[in-house]
Image (tube, rainbow, N blue to C red; front, side):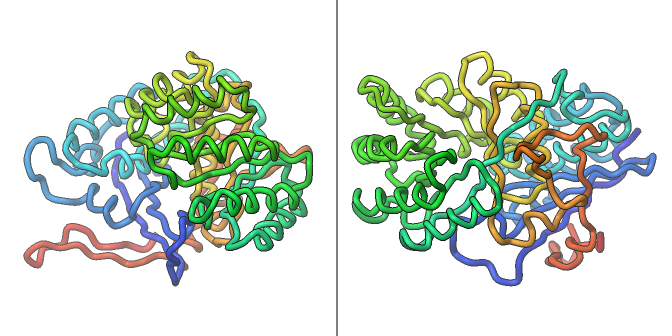
Length: 397
């Protein structure tokens, strides 16, 4: 089959708040083929910047848009997806946000190929089985301990067995303030649920500040301290990890969501001393690149965990990446109130089973479809033009 069209849909809530909440807008990508099939993907980045990477005019041989790289190409096998992902990278070698943008197309290519071949994506990328994963409800800290505890209690009422709290006031006050936030989360979840903390790179390269929190949070039975430092501070991460291990502190160090290409992720896995590597399929260039990281993590004995704070279209794509690794048993599961989390897919999400687990679907492709009514409801209409000539104009889904 041949790639006939690549359609772009910018969806957003009516009002965007200034908070670390990536579920407020998104770029959804549809790939259509000449045999009438459709595949869907999602990017985790600024939608308008990513849209430009699909339609902008050529600057030179290393800045050619994604559509030009993919339209008219043949797509019949997994090798074709890998070839096309590489071609898009070659055409857009000097496009700064290429990996974020092309992720949507890469996911959609795997989805449509799975439908064409009648196989789930996890089989196409080389897995033999789809193992269950424990989803952790991923939310932001409340503005204070009382609100944080209330959020934690609501998570338990929804029958989650694990939760991650992040950003918000974390790291913006004193050590005692951070401990109070995590204590509130633990009190609300109770003693048995897994609790993870995402610091949102708040301490930059300050290893001492991160270490103090690691010690304190370990006493509250926190599974990992995520992104305590900036992603590029690989040496500082190694110093932190070494200090935690040397002193017998029972908490993992997690990072990697800021890795937007394979070599960056590999650098963190081999040189930062991570216990958990967290990769966003919508940032690192799609399923193709994320699977390379999962394979490398398996080789190194580091636990791969998806980073996903978008819709369940991204949740579905993420779980396929590491479906076949039984030891990678945790999955991020956005649990906020945005209607875009569940609303962009049909069926409405990756459902937990009666024991609270999820797994990649056995259905062809990703196992979910885009909800066209939701796209129509939240679509922002965009027109890009140069000298009166249209480069892109939004269409109805």
